[in-house]
Image 1 (cartoon, rainbow, N blue to C red):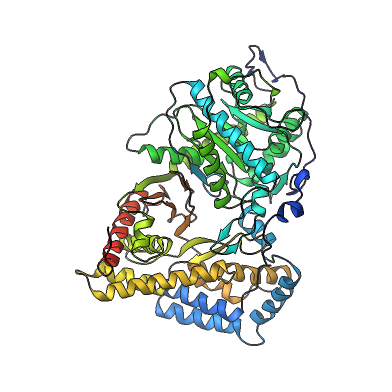
Image 2 (tube, rainbow, N blue to C red):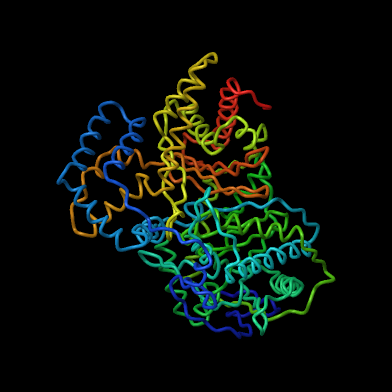
Length: 634
């Protein structure tokens, strides 16, 4: 039996029956828009080289340097010997290195397929919290539903215009210093969706999509956004469509979207069952084929003791649970634009096609567009084609949805995010001290952990490898001896010493040197991953370096951090990657630094608020050490 669902047009039915005038376009794997093929798009930008294969001994030396602060002397002695054996002449490491160099000589990026699979498509935990980041826009104040929809219409219009810049290869070339960066991630921001599988997911991109998806009260609507001549529809028409959609979906539907919050294997199984019904299959296809999804959220009740900025961050990340907006989502879609009735706005994105910087650039563009664009009720135009997407939900699927509701509610209860503005100083003040803002903040993060726990932690910072074709990321291992030594000494000192400034300089240099290695494709982690994958693919025994407990210790990222810079007053957030760890994203601005710190409530040893306090204290302590030697205006 199919469950009864309220038809927003006024009648009760066992099926949601609405006029249908869409068809499923073919889905192809990561195919760029046909009017701007990848070669055409990239031909407008600087050529970048292939990803190099690092030297084996350099990687092993760097690996030993970064594990040493985490180990006892006896543990390090064992790891040192295991690592030497792996890298010995004629040994397994040398054999794997030769195989990797051969692969690297024949491919523009020897890592990209492995990384997409290992980091994303084969990852089976829910994408919510565990993978998808959220980006929080400046808070808005809406006095009415109409004002909410006006802002949503402007964000939609801005996004479509940004897409036009990508399609026409008019996005400015990205640079890191003087080095041009690979631009291919921009082609994957729109039209892309992750498709769940039973054991592994896939990515699909519809090259010819002309529509977006609007979600309201858990109802899904298809909205055409291009006219007959291929032009983007007028902002007033988008607003008219949104008003009609809200009018037609006043009652909440069963939250089919909540299935995308599930464990990937469970969602993959439910997905196959949904697709057996022709109506469901067509609706799923419309969502997957869409350019992006826009979620019109209802008001979320305030939580006692939770700041407004932290409440926004948690809501953007997961939708605040089944009773709020977690079902008013499609978390598999690469881009979801979120507009809440109380003014919480932002985007949530499925991470596998792209990294944070292209999404932050999109966010800056559309927030600026919304600020500059004038749109009122006087601009409303008659509706273009909109279609309510029907889902037939039988009793078995209803039970699956109920389980998903319970699971997302448990996850929502377990994640604590503290989003805050550190306003004592900003990046320009750090620069005035002749120091790198990123290195400065990273040292403070490690120091905050040592301050709380009395020992260092494996510390991941994301570095872009877009200097190379199809480059994604490399790990900056920030738990370096110089940083740990400086932090421990400063925390244990009762008074200032000139030696502290010298130690800070050494710590800054150690971090900057590792950053340089990572962005040049000479980090530890991706190289070791490639060697391990080759061993597995060739039926070899997993080398002992990967079985050594120290390897697991050094990859237990209790600190998972990232700088995502944005011009506007925004910050990105994501969940921790270790059960007893922290996620920490930051946006260094001129006179302040925006942070979002996350942790799991179920861990008895972590607290996002306490860590934020330790981080703020550490930032001030670093400033004081730096300012004691170099005159500044701080």
